[in-house]
Length: 292
Image (cartoon, rainbow, N blue to C red; front, side):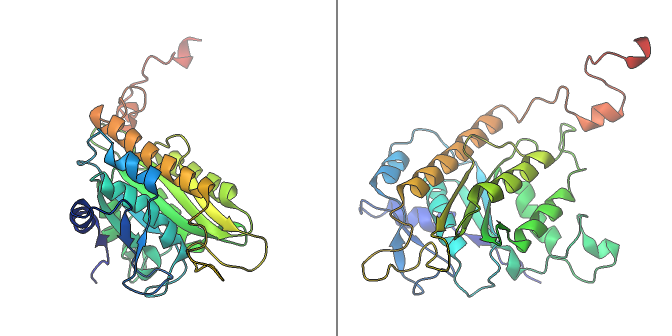
C-alpha cells in the first residue's frame, strides 16, 4: 500500500521565490475553502522575518502530522493553521513533508510493527521512516471534548513504541530532534492539549524549545473554526488573530533555531545519557552505592 506523503518544499520554494508579491501564498491540501484556491498565509511582519533571515536551514528536514479525525478529501481546520507553520518552514528552505494520519492504516499498539504482534495490517513502519528522518516534528490536533484527538493519542502511542531504540551514540532514538504542536478547536483546551502532547514528546527524547505550542479556539459553544469564511465580511476566521499568528511564528522559528543548534553540535552530548554505555556498566561518575 502506497504511503500518501506530500512533499511541499521544492514546489513552494520555486513558486514563492519567483514572485514579487509582498505576501506569501500557500496552497492547502484538503482545506476548508474552495479547492485550488490560494490564500495569503504570512503577513508582512512574518514575511519580512523570512526575507531577512541569515541562517541556513536548508539541510533540515521537517515533518508535520495532522491528527484531524477527517479523512481526505474533507477539509481540515487543523491543516489551515499547520499551513502557516509549513509556509515559514519552506520559505526558509527546510525540506518539508506532511502526513494526515487518519488516511493511513495505523494499527493501535505500542510496538514498532504491530503485524509482528497479531495485527493483519499496519502502515506505521512506513510512516516511522519519515519520523526517524525528520529533524523537526510538528503535531497538529483538533480538540474534542477538551482533549487531543484519538488519532493524536494513537500517534503518541506509536512513537512510544520506539522509545527503547537508540541512535548512533547509544542515546534514545529521538535525541537530537525537536518537537512542537499546533492545536485548533472551539471553546477551551489549547494549553491542556499542548501540555499533554509536548510532555509525551519530551518523555521519549525530543527536545522542546521555548514556546513550542500554538493554537486557535473560537468562542464557547458551536461556531466557526479556524479558516472558515467570516460571515458578512471578507477574510477567514482566525487569520486576523495576532495572538495566534505571533505564537505560531515564534514556535516555528524556535523549532528551526533549536534544530539548527542541535545539528551543528552533532546532537546532544552523549555523556551521562547513553543507554548503551549504561547497559555496559558505565555510570558516568555517579557514586557507587556499594561504598556508602
